[in-house]
Image 1 (spheres, one colour):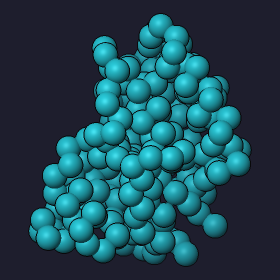
Image 2 (image 1 turned 90 degrees about the vertical axis):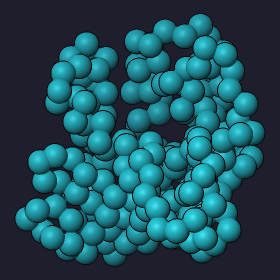
Image 3 (image 1 turned 180 degrees about the vertical axis):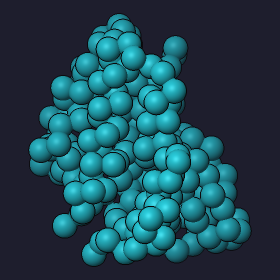
Length: 198
């Protein structure tokens, strides 16, 4: 079972930050909170050892995916309103009971070093979180690449609900990564690499 301390850090505290954003409380603390979304994805392969900052987040459990996709499609069909988009995410997407905490997702927007390493080589990656001044978690993961299907659609929809492009993006250009968590280490300054999962 994924440790509650990591769920609190990567999900609960992130949701709390989004609630502050919805209330218009967007100060330095909120910016630092975004480090729970922007992690370093580390890979090694034919493109060399590589670290890339990517937006990562959890995904719904499989049984909740169809409903989430339908609701996101509906939201994307409505005129964009940033405040409503945040409220939608809080009420429909960031719902703890629907989340699979053993998996994280990200989009591949650049298709450079990370893409080459994961598409050509071993499907392994490390996700490294760091939130100043001293909180850090390291997730060692098995990776799946999705270029169609519900996981790919979920990752692209979720991105566009929050970062609504002015004109529709060509999702065929942005594959999704599904990271299945195999190990978690607490790399915070008071733990120094303590394995907390499994």
